[in-house]
Image (cartoon, one colour):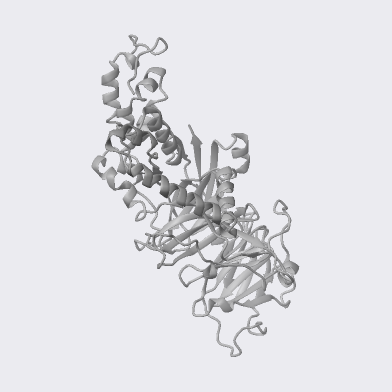
Length: 531
């Protein structure tokens, strides 16, 4: 579509509009996509010049879009809408400001605690637990110097563990710890056994313990309290398997913390909310003989009679990548709490990794100086139990992936941000997949397939003299924009906390996000603003 000058957009003597329109559009073709997106908002003349079909096509070819757009087969409005959608998905207008890192008071306090081989702190750093020579010590690290609150030994040798092995062996020296958000409960994993201690109880009090039979052949490599301490996330060493023990509160908006009585009940440590090993993914028609699996799964928030989750996806004839999904929960008869339905998974978005996005970004190599360089730093999605956090409006997902490519004296985590579909779009996808699983629309779908096939055969039989008619009834191309993340940077040290500031997001109606990330020795904030 040709562009004609209008009275509202005219050349003046100003530097921004002194160049001829054709020369301005030629300059636009050399800009990288992020600069081109910003230039469109400078003035009305530049915005008008950016709507040319040829200019938009050149910029779209620098983005991870399949198939490659063609100005001869699409109108200027179609190309403009495609660029706007791609710019939103790829966060071309996202402003990222990183504050200088600040030292945490936890580090200086821990150095004065005579800490042992294992240290665990609450997310706000007010309570810290050390495990040294089979002695558990709880410190108040909100003051300087840190004050010892209580001390007790590990009593795993004098207790019998339900469904555990009969023969006692010496416990391993390495333990995995998790401290509740208020610092009153401590979970300790020893190979395949979990114990939960009430740190405010008497030192000789018994613990809540459970042998994880589903971890046979593997061992527990990580623990995390979630859902206001009502749920314990158990990470296993075998292929990124994750268990969720416990039952979440009936009211998802409740702020009540779980106590030791919750973990002693049937809805506590003995109840399994989710087992990622038995989850079955929807079959892909292109690879029916190859099965796919999820690893490193993490529940994000309650949503549509279930939970939103993020995870890695492996196998199934595709390169490893991350996914945003939904799993439905139900409460069976005589069950202590809700249970995830293994066959109710709906994949809501594919979150690209380095290998999975290669097809998307391959054509950007032709313009490496202005295109591919924007996304050359991407996660690897290779089974190392990542951490996720979801923005309050569920429109952004931040991933923290540990770096295993280089040997370092301390852990290193890379941070990435993904743009997610809207909640309305996710609800529609879940409803559609649920209808297909229930078989309510099977007959209608088969009828529409037959109808589409018959119409396609009819169009193929039309004479060559009706080429114009064929062009009009031909279906539009379905362009696919890869959800490629932006890299926020890296952090040294073991990750302790990663969360969004809900008050900032509420004040800006989801256009501004403040991300806080803390390790054992430092903290840092990122300000993400939609321009």
